[in-house]
Length: 323
Image (cartoon, rainbow, N blue to C red):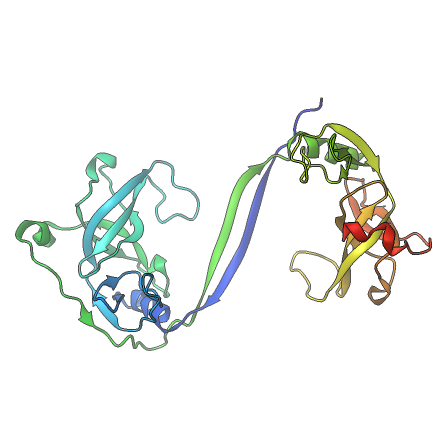
């Protein structure tokens, strides 16, 4: 049996969202070195603020300013910071209940003394970023507070949040948050065999020993019966279009002119339709029942697209169960 494949995989995209009045005020406030929370109907102050009460679902809009100092309520040590995290050296992830707030704010704590210097109940303060643009990263991190700021646990003083109208010049109305996931993907035994067969311009599925259906691509188990599959069956290469859609929005990193058709294709001998692009025919002439065959990419590896075979369309009764 060939070695199971594995490869590094990165999923990355920018996530763009608009902001309502509460989130806009919060992020704009950070830009101006002001920390805002929102007061609920029962008097609690939530930081970071939300637009709806998580208990009553009541809409929230009463903004208040809290302190830039607070108390660590829980923490975890990060031995190996990853790319894009707040600090490039070991640090603690902490939940900090800022003075005047009733909830914790998650952020990094710069603790040069290591994990032994961090404890629940320690007093900390915000370290502001030198350049701020209206995002949570305007708080560069937390740091241990100065002795003069240790008053709360010693003498029991409390901080009263002050009302704030949330008005700032040039408010932040939207943010772009980069999302990225790095991991190692392994297709497993069944799909490893499937990928090796594609390199030889063959399509191989697996048959369920119970229901006798052939699944392509194989998953190593029957999705209907839940039993393991091992019997390999070569299918296709021709197939039938079962359903399709017309794509009118061009993908940033895909060199295909729109409009084009993406379809579910039931390969001959398979009991599950796979998807592929349809080419060699005007997009408005693609139809259910169209008989197609693969056009392989340069060097094999996978079909680049499927094109009409010239055969008569398949009868609906032959593929209706695969819709």
